Length: 410
Image (cartoon, rainbow, N blue to C red; front, top):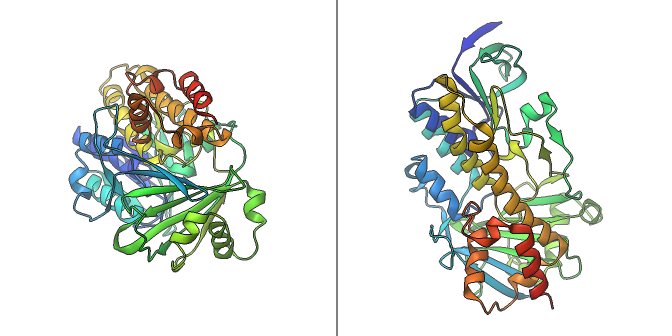
């Protein structure tokens, strides 16, 4: 079996892996990115947040995607029983971007990965990491199997797991822990939407709430060229109880939400429908002596607030400095410089996710808030600015949000 050498092995070439690879290659390190699939490949999570633009700019990655022609995103619309309320990103408490994109992830991820390669990282597709040996400090050893049938050893000095839901290191090192989120399932696809409704703003993601099943919600993300990402999330037993094949169940679910049913009445369901369930998980630690977990490999609860790419990019940026310091012989404070900031951002998103599923957060969204500052504070959370501790809903999210939900309750 062949043996190869690198400084940093990154498992996964998605947004977290590609961004970490580019930044670390800029610092002069040999970076090898091992991706199990072949790009471009389908992925959901198309709705970015304005905070992503800051991260892409900080990583000098914006130029790699800013000419792709993605649909501009300027806000979010929540709808229930055909009533609607919107937050736009120009109403913010935190100084930041007033817009972002709704992207075709196959193209977006591929562009970021190719930018990392252009900056000096080595990309290998069709590579599955079978095992990682951390028994020798500073010398992790990966056993890798390629889809061509070859197997080889990759010796590194540090490993980043950016494998997303694959969670390579958490599975190998038994880092998973049960989260508090109940079981949920999802059906999703891309459609030719044919929407021509005067009350539809293509530059806003639409989040719909089932009129009778409040734990069931929908997304409609307008993409470029008249296409859209659509999906539904709810209890597995509810989704499985709908009749027919996955596409039939998705269409039947959409028919039960008045606004989305109207908007998508002429849509062509011309792509395969994906399905997943029990996707929420938590991780005991985000770093170890010679590894760090990035993006969704570091934990995932729910996609309701489009936090996935934001956390992915932020974790890649936060990991770069301590990795660089460690490889130069210093002793970085991984807890303070990496784990604590990422956990803090996750905590804010998770507080809002928990309030959403309790059914109390919608009263905030549909409330005519008399205090414009509070509306801007909530708008900044929806824009992904969950690290701005000047925002009270970032500094003490659970208590502040619980109080706000009670005040806004009918």
